[in-house]
Length: 378
Ligand SMILES: Cc1ncc(COP(=O)(O)O)c(C=O)c1O
Image: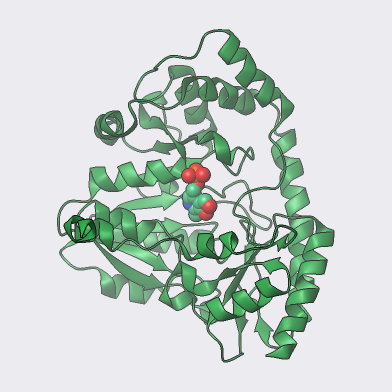
């Protein structure tokens, strides 16, 4: 009865397909479904967090975040743009809140926004909750999961307001090379569009280097996070970087959404940014080794085809079995391995499975051996 009174934009939101599966998992299952590093953050950050609490940073702070952290983030972005200052940064409660307030700020009623399919699950709902219409562009297996530039151009209409991009990409593990970043930036520049660029995996690039969209397009809104970089997904902290004018608008929306980001957490992240890059480099090397193991094991499964991956911590093989991906993932789960069905990331993810290699090499080997047996039985 009450449900009928909930507006369609909320009632039509789906519960994440991944969560449903995780909840059905036996406690001793090997988890190749994780969307977060399986390690702890640097001890120095934990100590800084505790020290911040002891110093009395237990109160509200500024809506856009504390100035020292905004300055430190701006310094870290100077590798892409020399003109970044603290006024270009707002600290958020992770990229999830960052993308939501970016959509609320930029997308008007009826505006169209191009979103990836398959893609991270929040983009379509964020656009729709802001009153806009998500229009999907495809990331196809046969194109190495890179966008088809001609298709993207053909989707732009007078109502298009923005393009959402995500490189390194969840769920595909693809890193957009510089020429693709430039080609998308050119579409946005020609049509006068914003680019909302989710760069939360920028620290996980195994070949080549991360190329931010901010390099090529002024109207870029970078949505980034410390969740993956410092293994602090539970801390809920990230940021948005864009023009000073948009930051002022974002700060208003953030005020009504969150009041302000968590104060003590910001001092802990500040310590993380001050530290040498040692932790981040070590994390990258650990994950590179795991990526290699995952690719080697997947190559042993004759019905799987996995394009090379150079970023994030996911592989997204296409399979030739005639079962849907949820059914396939449930059969794998029944044998004790958690993975995500491709369909959880959009209609074009069907026929794929997503494996995360945020787990030990031993578990990746064991888990993918089980997947191989299940694949052989279908
Ligand atoms: C592509 C992508 N963007 C954003 C997020 C959310 O990050 P945060 O923890 O900062 O909200 C995730 C988490 O898995 C992700 O994969």
